[in-house]
Image 1 (tube, rainbow, N blue to C red):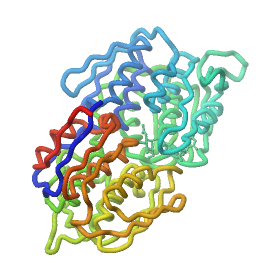
Image 2 (tube, rainbow, N blue to C red):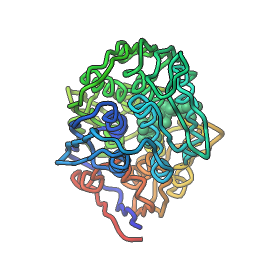
Image 3 (cartoon, rainbow, N blue to C red):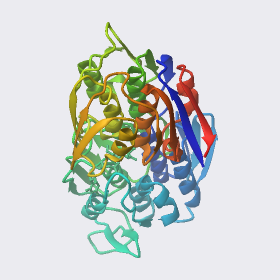
Length: 429
Ligand code: EPU
């Protein structure tokens, strides 16, 4: 196993280019199952998770070929209709094949994802929604078995349009229902749908394939089912979480730099929170720059994670790392996942002063030079990136073990950070 070693305390300077969004690439790859033929997806990050999704599509009978950052996915012949446990256990987002397989084949069997490091993460909204579209769903031997049907009681045919109200906005749940509804008979309305930009990217792809969807960007989506869809040619949006992670890293190191090829409009809350922390932020069309005017001192700021456009849970751990360097006390309230503070114990190993109580964490900042390098362990993707930020800001050496978590979501992390002058490398454990 490899670990990441960071020799911290060096301010980062320069430009860093953002890759395509992992959480857009995964649903868009799954959506290729909806229409037979060769699909083209551009700007697809080469990550452990996108490779896992590629393997799942191949298992289902598709051929997947990568040329640079473009994927050619041919879904003409599907030879399986299930997502096995071995794949779903390594990546929960495998559940995204549920909607498209049901829509195209009329039946599917997808392993039930278990809980994970950040929480229980049930999929009851996915299955309840599909049932509103006429599907029969049952849990059998650890698998979600789903079959479509019509009002005449015939099984295995097309899904029927219906109204779905989500108790809570769910990102992959909304995506699964969108992919199911585009080929259903009649009209589907999704209420209290998630509004994350990745869903907008999926809607753009589906519309390009011939789907009829209105309400993109809002919490109510209306889908008029069509008889068939054509293969897609679509570009993945920039990764807002990767962009946010590097902006925080540059600021936390005391340096200055620009994140390029990003979509600043997708990071409204982070830009505001960075400004409130006293960091200078300049936003241009596809670039965000961070730096300092005067003293390098981070003001303490509170955050509360919310569905988009609120502050993203996927940037909570990274912001906490920044707050360990502040000059005051900051409260961090995680409202999306019940167990997303796994980074706290590791940050404490680096000297951070953090108290937690349920979904609240109170961080007493140590000032910009307060953290000390230490051996720490990555526990999930975003927790790991907060340790990278802390390691870059800390004095001395930080060894982060289990970096496979980072490789799930950050393309070329070592090269990108080295390009900013960071002293970072991989070593065998
Ligand atoms: N929920 C349910 N039942 C469901 C579905 C969700 O109770 O059937 C709950 C969840 O437990 C959670 C809340 O609803 O409390 C929202 O979860 P959501 O369904 O939106 O999460 P997700 O779709 O499983 C996606 C991202 C996550 C990101 C969350 C929240 C992908 C592939 N994953 O997960 O990304 O944290 O939305 O924004 O898009 C990451 O990239 O590190 C990551 C974890």
